[in-house]
Image 1 (cartoon, rainbow, N blue to C red):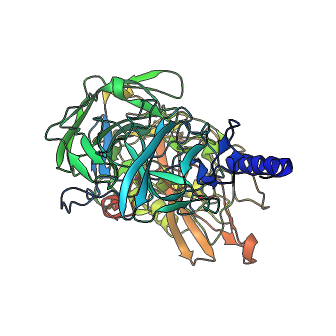
Image 2: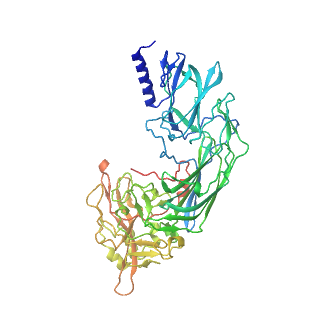
Length: 610
């Protein structure tokens, strides 16, 4: 018989195991459990904790000999005048930890943090099978919710354990001698097991965490407007071709037998929920044990989005319907993505043909997709729309060794880029003035000394319509009534005179914007090209400079130049930065996106630099 002090020590040890969130076992001679009952010397107390749900592949055995593989990733850009969309099939189902029984210290059995914690009200059941000379006999099962598990008293010995959940609050059936359990249809069935390695339950049993795997294939349908930088107010969404089949599992072996028929889960707009509270990202799931290919169709119509000026943009009857095949694999994630993006304005010809964004780039701190275009293309001196050359953050000088194309950070990743000098061909003046600009004679050390000379020598920009505070062009494609009248600021290729901040004399972490007399007088935006450059030294970065001039005789005209700013870069390691003016960025579509997005590791969500 143990002394009273030892009994207290034993209880303290058990409490410590509970606090650590592990699967622990204690055993003693006539010790007491948490209910004050004595535990016989041939039995022990089992304490369970859940680490979470792994999004890796399940190790569940299959009843068939299927060799099906995960659906091959595919992605394409579907273009129209109203809105464009990237349409993809991949395995990049986003993880949402918001509803989790979140404990940062919990780790999966692999030692890595579990991808998704289990909800605090989720039910799961633990099944125990005792090994009697190689024969496993069902001993008992207990249902729990994470964080409120009570100890289980079981005889000492060697056991296989199995844990099962439907990832909701549904009760899980008890086990029986047959070991077979009919699983529900279209549920997120979670499964974990000790597998081929039994646990020996006695006072020396090592702690063990339980990490669930998905048993069925999880198929996510995602419709988002991240590329339109706006939440969805309403939309009609219809999905067809989906099929969900249930299965029967042998708990002892993990073998699955798929049901011969299944149902068609309802997937309309009412079944889609905001992902992580973001109304620009709608997602719905269904689950199936079947691994036969499914030919899915996703249709989006009657789309309405909320603009940054609190008005609504409606695309009316504009419809997008896309068909993709998905081959489910049990235990894997699959996604059918429809990422709706703002369409472009096409203008120009020859080497100057480009698909332009409808407005300038700006940065919205703290947003899920901070790189975006203004919805109404306003004339603005918003400090978050002025960038130095090669910088991804506004009003910050770029590192000479880490220049970034900020346009490529607009969702979807890499679809947009900063224009080349050649792509300015059709929005710049012709004649000797253009030659001066191309020879880099228009801007020396940030002083526009020759702009007046160029104005005298250059012709007006062809097809331009000048105004006091902007000049614009009529695009050959992209005009759509959803963006307002045909002459609206986003249905025309309009360059607002937002000005620029000239060459900086000092290096600041966050530069105070000082536009001087350039606001309302000039438009200025970067190209992606150096005149002379190395990774360490950039000399002569080209940009676009345009303005309206009021001649003594005749009407106003618009003249614009591909001009050059002589940039310097420090060469002192960490302080090696590009000394650059601040100006706008106007993006164009990247014609190489199809090639880049075909890479196996491509993910539409941009990776934002620090």
